[in-house]
Image (cartoon, rainbow, N blue to C red; front, top):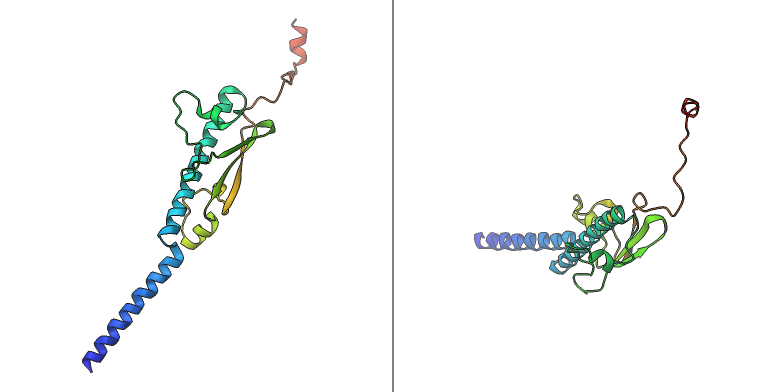
Length: 164
């Protein structure tokens, strides 16, 4: 009977190990899923860096760069402007009044991935994305010149006018 009990315990332990492994694979995904998630995280970090550099460029130049090549050509700047896996350039769509879009193709849905982990995301909520092509909205309007409109005339008070 002892041999029988030993076998039952071994089978039960094996079943518990298999069940916990299956649960772990479901929650965090397999190695392939993890690789895809890491690539998406890198894409997101690339886009965050591009956004920062667009904002700096707009502060210095008073306008948005025409394209990512112009942005990346700045002296001393090493900027990843292409997908690390496919080498496809990220899309940058400058718009009016300092607004722009940054686009990339993603292999995973960051919201589902973060929900499955049930932990704090490695990515800020502003940078969550679905699977597939997705564009983030950027805004450098505070740094971009708003056309040739003259500066508003300052009101002078009456005491200033009488002193002239």
